[in-house]
Length: 115
Image (spheres, rainbow, N blue to C red):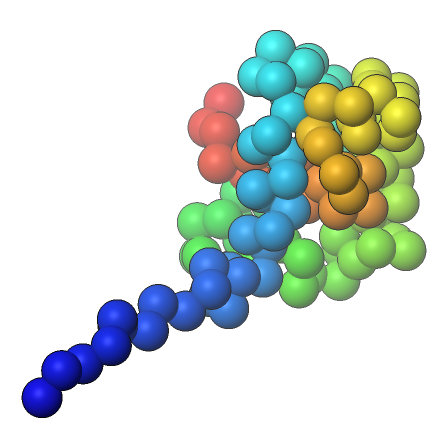
């Protein structure tokens, strides 16, 4: 009996932050590093610790109330905009790249880096 290709679930089904991480990865590395360093430098220590804890436990950042879109997420997006304007982000990140769709990717990168 002939079988079709195996079903491979979409990455976002396993990781709700995957779409944001992917969008952020499309921005050139030098620009990403500049934004990430700026955001990390301005986040309170307890927030950085929370990010690293979520990362260490394999939990999505977007599901945590501290980084909710209209809560801490707004602060993070504003920090990102201080380094890279929304229209410039769209130029580098392609169609649909805006801070609403990329800020969790920034946080995920910061969370993964041990200082």
